[in-house]
Image (cartoon, rainbow, N blue to C red; front, side, top):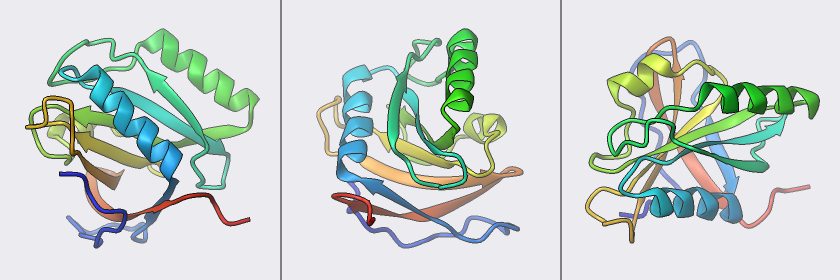
Amino acid sequence: MRAPPYHSSVRRGPSAYPVAMLTITRALYDQIVEHARADHPDEACGVVAGPAGSGRPERFIPMLNAARSPTFYEFDSADLLKLYREMDDRDEEPVIVYHSHTATEAYPSRTDITYANEPHAHYVLVSTADTDGAGPFQFRSFTIVEGVVTEEEVEVVEAYAA
């Protein structure tokens, strides 16, 4: 089911970091969902970069799921290295790390939690389960810090405030 633009925060464990909120433009939201739909039945994955320190997602970067799997995603190591060098050159950082789940709800798996290594990023999951890739979709965002998963609110806006 496609999540409404606003969600209640649900804490899944104690965290030293405050509960955050992801604010994302409708255009970026739609690009992430479209990528999940297009790659179904395999998991889609990618990054949305933003100016370093801003916490603002701006540049959509779909990545190839090197695992080409409906149950697992993996960034190609060469592509990931290239992406991080490019973000460094542009003074950007990964604001959102996203992927889809094709057979389960939009909640981080044990593997997702183990591989989460960006403590300041929003981890967005889109579930295409039971949709056959056509929608509607679950769209949820989490912080993952030291193995602690915290769901956060998602606000979809037409444009960012100046």
